[in-house]
Length: 269
Image (spheres, rainbow, N blue to C red):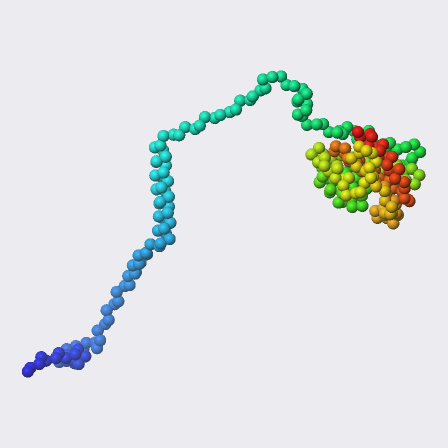
């Protein structure tokens, strides 16, 4: 059995011997100059899913809006319903003045000059400090100053529809007397009546909406150590609250405040 000769490996083949007289060749051939590097071609980017989604939404909206507009434009216009206005109706007969007066809101019980409704200081009396001895208008701040909790009274009066107030003050013997009329707005008439609540009152007149009370224990004036005994009368008519305060250095007879309250109430009715 014959075998084909195996070609020697290029590594094992010796280089050829040059002939005699041939010029010497360099032991190594010069290396070929490298080819210039060409810029690498950019790889194609794959479409991003977000851009595709946004593009699809925008295209869908534009397409849908165009189709909807075309459909609506081709539809016939829908006529609007006729405008119906109710014509004013007038009573057939003549208006009865008595019926109209009964249906109208009743006038305020007291809407005149409050100063003219106040009691006047009796003869022989003197002024009580800087308080007005003649019937005079007073502000809500002046009304609040009469109380111990002035700031609280001021806020309460303004929050309850305070409208106006008038008062008169005088001093007679050992007694100091203040008579006040406080009027509220017509929509807050109940606030006038609320001034008579919270106290146990004895009636000073059969028809009076209120009563009186006399303290048996002394109290202190605001920011003072001076004591006093107090008698109070309260009543309400319409939007006006009547208040009478009598200050004494010792317990007083109830007849004093009852007489003042009765005479002041008679000027309101």
